[in-house]
Image (tube, rainbow, N blue to C red; front, top):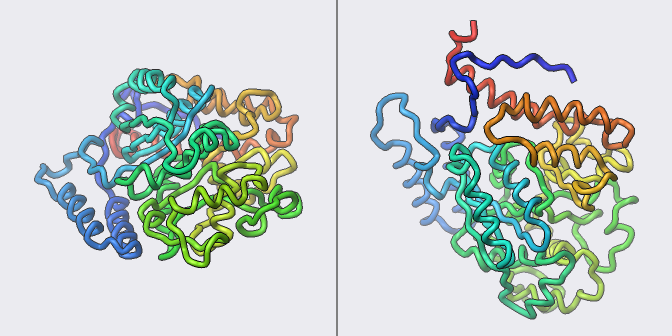
Length: 413
């Protein structure tokens, strides 16, 4: 791929784009408007007003003209909430996923990590060892694996270890309004801020967002093999899931159990008991059943936000990724750890091995381009631009912002 050569400004050796402080921008004001609308739709006007007051007070606080505000001053109501469930041997995968989120994102984040007791100390130790210029961008909270209804051991063994925990997030995270849940094998190739903005696209009934399980019904798993109801013509994949937890907690869901609606927590156990002998993919199947009966509650985002091997291993079939590039990579089927899909593995290893303080172009992007030359014999490797477009755009935007805003246009002559 042809690229302009990078010129690091002489005045900023070892520049790290995430060391810079953040200036409130139009995005903040757009977010205020969106949150107000979200509050109205969720019948939480008082809370919406409080959020606006907090944000405006932050923006109007006395300061000298041109003074910048650090990430530490961002009110919690503006944070991105990211949740993941990690059990067994998923420690490294989870840390690489969180690293990708921190590397490319702008807004402060709160990581909600659900894991087994044995992994808690290592998560805490590893995250605290990251450089200060990155740790200031997030806070992390570690939770035990808990299930509020039914047999915990049965829930824990549903499909992958502990994966069913995501079904209980609306019940556990009572003080969180909205949340992005991702599987451990997900990588962000552009700012998390961008997928978070999709919450603004929800209409008054939508409370969750996922991507289709497949783009072509005739080769999709659900359309060929499912023995239970599923959403749409191909089902949805729950590996990347936006949730408005407030709406989920306040909604009565239509179901196949009783004529009346059921609250989320009250529905989970009887739904599982009815369909447990018919489901294959555990909690994802239960979510498909729920949204089959409540299609008006689901916002479907394009496959570029949950790009999996299925989108290229049978030929390229994600048109949005072909146009825009992959935004969120989902390396299911264990492809980060075997040789079946070397393109996915190359991206995973590039982010895993990137030294935090190095230059992104020199230490990640250029080596990744060279690595991709070794994968052209595979179907996924034949379309490197699909994997590289967003990550290049993200790096270039951060670099140019630094040069133009922080160094100054006059320094470029």
